[in-house]
Amino acid sequence: MERTQPVIERLSAALGEPVFTYWNSTKGAICQNDVAGLYALVRARGHVDRLSLFIKSDGGSGQAALRMVNLLRRYVKHLTVLAPLECQSAATMLALGADRILMGPLAHLSAVDTSLTHDLSPIDRDNDRVSVSNDELLRVIRLWTEQAKDSTQNPYQALFPYVHPLVIGAVDRSSALSTRICEEILSYHMTDLDRAREISNILNAGYPSHNYPITLREARRIGLNVEAMDDSVNGLLFELNEIYSEMGQSASTDYDERNSHDNSILNLLESSGLLIYFQLDKDWHYRSEERRWVPLNDKSSWRKAEMVKGKVVISQLHVR
Image 1 (cartoon, rainbow, N blue to C red):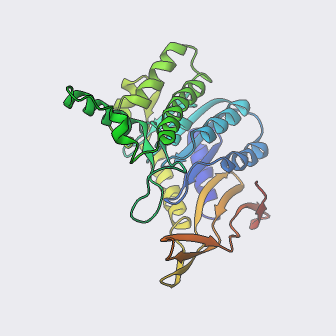
Image 2: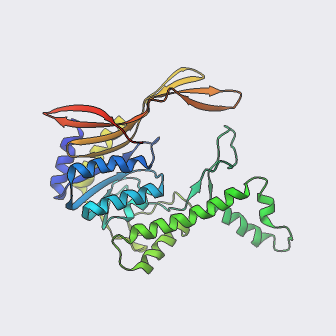
Image 3: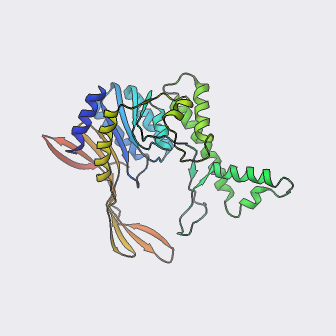
């Protein structure tokens, strides 16, 4: 925090407005508890006319993204999202809630079509549940229809031994939910609801891959209010990202081939004088008879770091 706070102050001075940061490690994801962490920052800052939010995330829960946008729009009149790197999936949803998105040379948004890991999803070789996407299912059905026109067999009958019917229904519902969330988020600052629906449909069904990189030019083409980020601002964000990457690096200790301990930091939220982060603190044990890893002695928690008289004071932030 002694290293990040000066960078945030310089970033705020360069932009002429307060700055919040939201950063996920490779193990982290946008989740419901992030809303409470963001609320801690918002309460400390209060109502503001303008705010910039630095986002670096591979995605997570779209519903959590909607709640975060709702929270920010209650306290901020004009919101700018700073995207120097990946801002994918649910993070793209979060960025849709901004009046303006600034994108650096390495920045990209992504499609937001939903992949779902259901309790009845297929199992992979490691005995883990596999995520199933609506786009994958629709492509299988379409290919079957196009290439087996004379077949009398229903394609779903061939799918059911591999993908449970309830999973197919849940994925379809999840896809509809994703489109609805995008429309709702865009409505916070877009008055043309038809245009908002069009953008939502493009992001949900207009790309052949969930990880398709939507660059600055593509984002403009689909109708988002995006601008190129100034090089000096981009440099400061990369400086922050480097520090956050050091904080969020893997911190696993292997005791033997079946037991390990993980102490990694997953999610970070920061503003001037305040840092909120989630840190794992749990053991992992491999159950060979079940062919899977199970957590033990889980003491993971949200923590709050504050600058008090020039020193960093850390305490637990109780979020449940």
